[in-house]
Amino acid sequence: ATLPYDDQNIFAKILRGEIPSQRVYEDDFAIAFHDINPQAPTHLLVIPRGAYVSWDDFSARGSDAEIAGFVRAVGTVARAAGLVAPGYRLLANTGLDSHQEVPHLHVHIFAGRKLGPMLT
Ligand code: 5GP
Image (cartoon, rainbow, N blue to C red; front, side, top):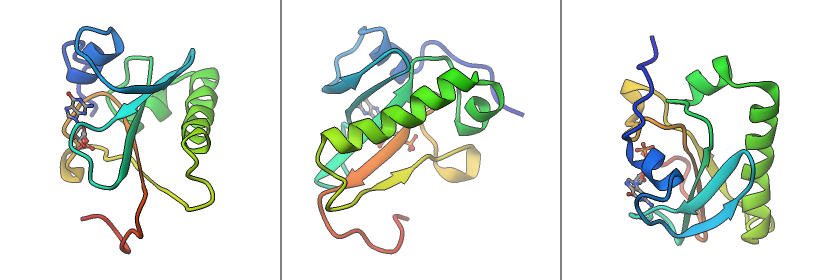
């Protein structure tokens, strides 16, 4: 079962502009900003504007427009950052075993170096 959405989570505060972030993109469905503790030369986070705890929650409850808008935003962010030619990795930790730390859906974008087979 998915936890109820906590509107005091750190990404909710970033969305509302209550705490600062280095924003690189925003549209009606998503915002993107630099991860505060980058694990690659480029490490961005893309989050939907809607109140969704996780990938599971979003894929179950999100509207078709929100889901399409979010998926398109992830691609747009990567394209705008020049990551298509060198390549990039997407990651969405989901739930207890995944090491998801912030309970607002976020897709990580990693790029800027040769990545290993997996990030552990
Ligand atoms: P998770 O482990 O939930 O998949 O990833 C959470 C990510 O959020 C981590 O990579 C962490 O560095 C990042 N993060 C946590 N707090 C903040 C913050 O206040 N600002 C930014 N920009 N990133 C954060």
